[in-house]
Image 1 (cartoon, rainbow, N blue to C red):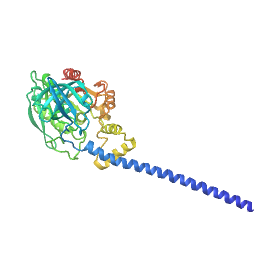
Image 2 (cartoon, rainbow, N blue to C red):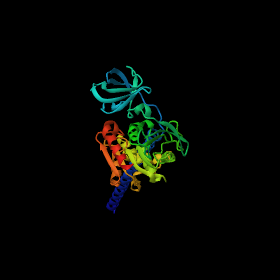
Image 3 (cartoon, helix red, strand yellow):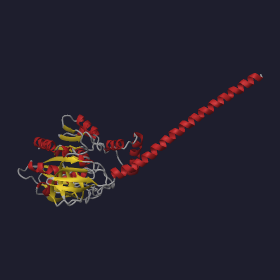
Image 4 (cartoon, helix red, strand yellow):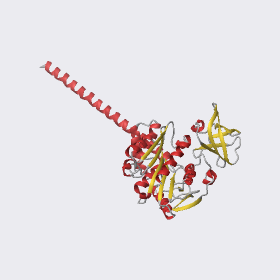
Length: 400
């Protein structure tokens, strides 16, 4: 009997030990899970704040001076990176860029020589006098800041009555033959009308009237109700106001041109507007067709783990009212029925090229896609100017 009691006691102790160890394991697992969830939630909250600051918040701040002029020669300029400025990645890329201090303007061409600190490039001064020692910055625009200074084009500042207030725009008439085709040009996030200057000369030469517009949250334009960029969800209404203005002034057909967020805006106009049946074509450059995918790309570039990105997007909905589904125009691609010329660089770290590839796959009969090797966000025109402009001209000749 004593032996039995000892055996029973030892067995009971073993069971109790097993249960204790099992409970300890369960508590440990639960603790780890809670810790992981806490990290994901904390990271999501933190990165939703970054998303609000870097993506949603209105940004009309002036550009940063990143460079200083070291020397000016006959058709050349030598520039050096300012010591305390963010790195100017485009300084060493042979392409067409603008260089300015806000009052002067010039155009950079190919890189002629480069050392660790200095870069010498082809240079064409266009407006004002450049001086050694001036701080300057680069621009993708590559032309002075109005159609007359850039191309010698006559233009008018016009006011478009918009749904939440008046919107400014440039109207440029054709220089020779005139058609009833109007182009409405829509810039991207943090951009302005200047980003469309590169195409105005070709449009005018082709007989196309152009309307380069401001939209809500631009400097001088009315603010949106949300106080944030809506990435096409509301901005398309301002494009509709512009097309209405065009129709009231003689247009019978519309070409919509948009880059980056502007591309998403014109696509959503085409999906939403009652006037969309008078559109004859879209020209899109690295269009933001799904803001959620763009955020995923940005998080990937920052090495943010996907679970934290997911949490950040969830918190962005709760904190800032972001409607991710409404910002997904890619899912509605099959509702489009107009020819589309689409450009995208394969090295785009802002808007994933995969969204444009999927867009083209969904609409093989409508989308003419051109990808550009080693090309960053909306820089295809800068690096491949002649090819880009030739494709635009050919497309417009076919559709107008």
